[in-house]
Every structure is written in C-alpha cells, then in structure tokens.
Length: 416
Image 1: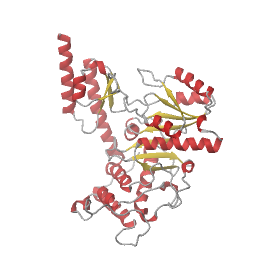
Image 2: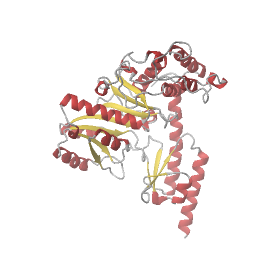
Image 3: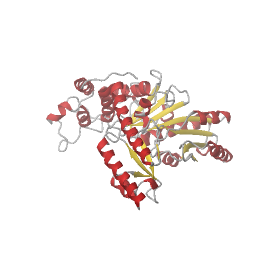
Image 4: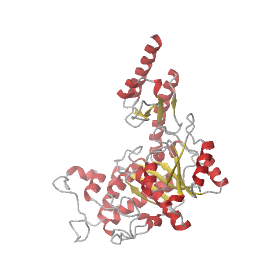
C-alpha cells in the first residue's frame, strides 16, 4: 500500500474540478432529471464555510450516483465528474488495500456493510440460478454464529438456506467437526450450492475467520461455493495491522469484500463499500431500469455522490503511511488496555490485530460496564460478554478511569 496523501487544498481542488464537470442545475437546461439541489430554505448554497468544505459542497450539489460506475462510462452523464472520483475510490480500495489486480474489480459505495453483504449474497444466488439452473432452496449460506445479523437478514430476504456454524468459545474460530455435521445435513435437505461468508473482524469479538481450513474442507467435499469476506469493521484496520492477511483479492479464493467507512474511517453513516471481482455484477442487472443509462446493479438505487467523495477525501488526506500510523496508535492503546486487564486477571477475548476487547461479563461489575457504555452480547438476557472498542475518542485518560474503577471493585470484592 503506497498511495500518496494530498494536501487539503489539493483535495478541495480535485473535488471542485469534479463538481465543475458535473451538470449544474443553475447553468444548463436540465428538465428530465427527478432531482435538484438541496432545498434552499434549509441548505445555503452560498454559505461562506462551504468554500473550504468539499464534502458539504458536494452534498448540497446533490449528485446522484445511481448504478455501478466501474463497469464502463454508461451512467447519468451530468454527474460524470464525481462518478470518476467514485471509480478512483473503488480502485484504490480494491487494488491498494485489498491487493487486487489493476482494473479487475467492480464495486460501488453502498449505504453500509449490511447492504454490501446482501448485495454479495444476491449476486451469488443469481449466479447459481443462471449458471447452474439452481433453485433458491438448493442454495445455502455458511457463516459462523459470531457473524453480523445482516447475513441472517439476507437469507430471509433472498429465501436461501441459512447454515449457522458454531464456534470454539475460546478461539472464536468455526468448530469444524460440527461444520461437517451441519453441511452433511444441509446436503441431505437438497443444498447443492454454497455462499460462504467469513469475517474480517466479527462485530462483538473482533475475531477473524480462518480461510484455508474451511476452503480445504469444501474442496475435499467437492462442493460448489463462492467466498465473501465481511470486512465491515476490519476492512480499514486489519490490512494495515496484519501484513500477512489472506483476506484479500490476492487470494484467489476471495470473490467479494464488504467494508464500512463509518466505523474505522470515521466517515458519516451511509458510507459503505462493496468490492467484487469482474464478471459478477451483471447477475443483478435490473433490466427494468431502462431509464437509467447503463441500468442499475445495486440494492439501494439512487445514492448520494457525496458519500463517495467523503471516503475518498479521508483516504487521500492520510495516504497509506498516515493511515497505518493512525491504526498503529489505536493498536498501542488497545495493547495498553489488555496489559492492564492481564495484570488484574480479567478474562477477555481479543484478536491481536483488531481494536476490540470483549470482556467476560462476570469479570467486571455490570454497573461499571453500563457507566462506560460497554456493549453487551445480548439485551434479552443477562449478558455473558461486554465489548470495548478502542476508537479515536478513547484516550488514555478514559481507559485509566475505567481501569481504576475495575481495579477498585476487585479490591473491594477481595476484602469482603
């Protein structure tokens, strides 16, 4: 990864040039587009602060990035300038961060990881239907019990079989002996084609699913499958903290990846990314979208070009070296937290390359966990785990305050 950072002025100039290439609702006769600039009573297009705020300037200009812009130049031409920045962004993420070959990936800026995960499932379901003559009830989705609920949601929406795999409670890796039983049962019920979803950081534990063991098993069984990586949380940290990661396009097993910008990258909500190898997007072409140049291939349809701009801006502001340095700083804070927990004998789970620390609920008082807004594994029953995520706002003084209260509670418990 070696993309260079840009100065604030260079970023502003690039965005202004892109907006200048877009059609302007004020200066050209646009009669057919069912959109316009944002409402002038609420959004001030001439506000002075917009001059140095490229994201807000793009938001108010309101470009529509409907469609998938990595598949050629067919799209709404009046937004070609900002669409080009989205193409640059997809290529940067696919090639620089996830080691894809130049020009060999498609993708788009989605509303978030949930949509991107379901987009992958939708594509592979249709792929099996069109290429293998499969029916939906012959398609199963393999995923661990720690996987984000968007996969269960996608199974429900797409009417494909959910195959939930238990994990080892210590390593949080898939229990392969039970996986054999679950797949065997699925095959008996007519499942012939598999969509495999593996995690680059699960939501609660930050665990990263191993790729090779499950791939070797599926190969040995001669099963037909496609592999999607859910990197919604880990996508902007794990590739920078683990240089030996196999969860990328350099691994021929990996077909698609989802990422969220609004987590580690600190972009606004609604800024996710979907990346996939060339040759798959057409399986979800919506032929009925005849009024959209180039058709539509996405779940969300119309989407704000400002969301692509803000992800691109953040990545270009830091550059590869700057972003790695920021992630390394979060790793240092996370290590500090874990060292202190170890000293106190607190039980927890943590992947060494991720900034999530999940503590056994019986190790700390729930009153302290609730005071510091730790997240429970369940709110429908007494929790078994409390989660800490060391984000940018989690400074050492906050960690120290939390740790001091935990240490005091343990001392009181010991004395009583």
